[in-house]
Length: 138
Image (tube, rainbow, N blue to C red; front, side, top):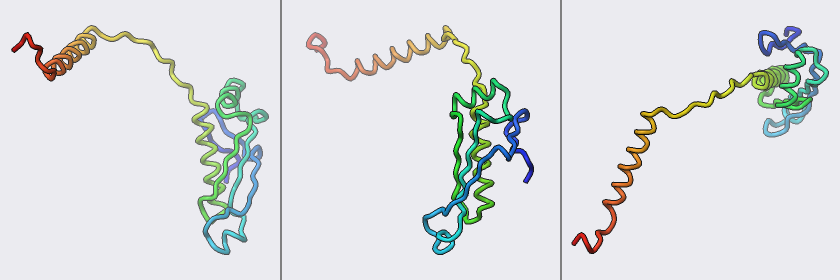
């Protein structure tokens, strides 16, 4: 394992900043699940991390909070569960760091307005044809 988790090109989280704990995972698995601590709980303190610029830190804290907790107990192997927990942490951080593009307000085109009104007229005519005829029409 390398020393850093690569989140983006500009963000690398040092593994020494991660707090890792292990526990019994529970669930099915017989004696192996009862005796071995394969569940991985990963805690990452965003507020005190050196991996982010101030703007990035503020964005992550706004979206995820000042501490991120991830756990994994999918596999029987402690090492594999640790890898899964780190992958989940990286995915969460990557999503939190993504800057959404601002929506540019647009107006409907003349053609789209015309098509919408024609569709409404067709639908109205279809419903009018289904009505019972008035007495005057007999």
